[in-house]
Amino acid sequence: MEVLLKRFTGALLIGIMALSLSSCSSAGTSSGSSAATSNNGSASQDASSDESADAAETINIYYQTWNPNQDQFPDCQAEFEELNPDIKIQFTRITYSDHLQKLKIDLASGQGPDVYSLQAGASIKEFRDFEMDLTDYAIKEWGGNWRDKFLPFATELIEEDGKFFGMPMGTTYAGMIWLDMTYFDKYNIPAPTSYDELKAATDTLRQNGELPLVIGSMDNYINQDIFMGIANDVSSEKIYAAIEGQIAFTEPEIVEALRIWQSLFTEGIFQDGAVGLSMVDAINMFEREGIAPMYCTGSWGIGSYSPFRQDPELRAIFLEGEREHQVALIDWNNNGEVSPVVATVENVLCMNANTPNPEAAWKFISYMATGGQDILVNRYMQCFTSRTDSTATLEVDLPVDGKVCRDKIVDWGTNNVGGYREIPYPELKLAICDNLKALGIGSVTPEQAAEAIEAASQAQKR
Image 1 (spheres, rainbow, N blue to C red):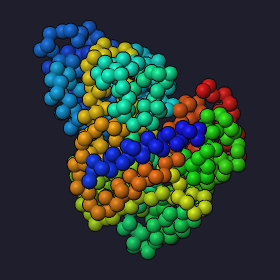
Image 2 (cartoon, one colour; image 1 turned 90 degrees about the horizontal axis):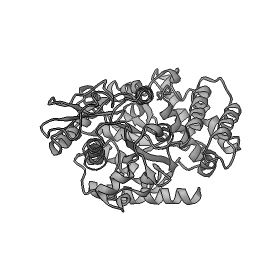
Image 3 (cartoon, rainbow, N blue to C red; image 1 turned 120 degrees about the vertical axis):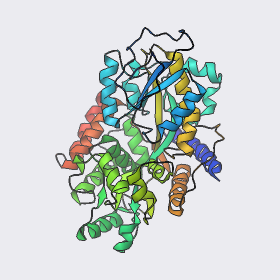
Image 4 (cartoon, rainbow, N blue to C red; image 1 turned 60 degrees about the horizontal axis):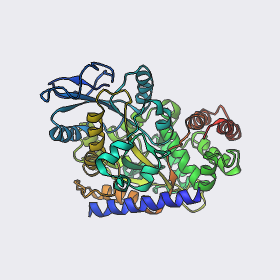
């Protein structure tokens, strides 16, 4: 594991340095109509259409994802369709949890979108039976050394026995919190960098009738992100060894990480009823309503600074108001060192094994992993690059606080990465996420949660 983490961190160093320098559901429907923003199609719908049909016909490729969103994707769609006038993209964007549930139903019935996005780790393994092996497509288009186009860790996270069932699009970093300095200036509160400082800040905010640290703990991904940051702060070595089944989750360091997580609820650091709030609502409270003094999210929060975002509420509150924002890592165990970030491939582009138009679907995947990614990284700042060969440069003139935030994330990605963000084993991931929620509502103790997770770990096939 130590070797893996060193390789992981070294790969991130290369990618972040390059980025820093550059910045100084369904297919097969033949139609002449333009692409829609949503659909209920499936890969089996109108399967009688054929890619060898008359060139005047148009192939519809259905793409379902949680990210990019409706603001960001149209630029990618327009460029792709200009390059490929015979292919139209039918785009569906839904929340991550709904996205996974819809995929499970649609793909199991032999339908579903032609192209869909997953996260590296448990998700891509869970949908393996419905994913096309893309290895030969990549070799045919980019050559035998195609992996050199991407950061080493980006391909390592999605490789399985030398095969690739998805292509990497972007990298993200998690385990941080974002601050609206309006509240901290108003109440003369220092920006917190440790657990004790965070507790003092939330106490002051609550005493003045304000919200504390907001989290949409209804959604598993943010719970996992913050917990992995805490666990890495306590012991990166122990948490990854436990995930790989090398040690038990009942080790004292992991129990301590679970205790710290639960204390965020019991000590009022998170808002009341946190487990009942979604991340969509948490984001809106911070970015569009301006009522959350701070909230939990990842590096993708920097995308809210993009002037290309057309969301009027976001522009009025986040972009065009007088608010200053900061991003921070926390020293969760008060040992004098802030936690590291955790990192992953932001979006793994997968092809439905049942698509009737695999060549057209691959063209879209290839584009999104390269040119489409450049738009999302440099225009919308949705993620950081997973490419090593991109010459695209940042298209955004950031305000002072946005530049400070982005520089911090670049520095953390270069110098302070604990390891990977995603848990690669589906049943183990579910057990961890379930117990993080149980800790949040107080139905289990940290010791009980550790025992339950360890039982799942022992049953997990690796």
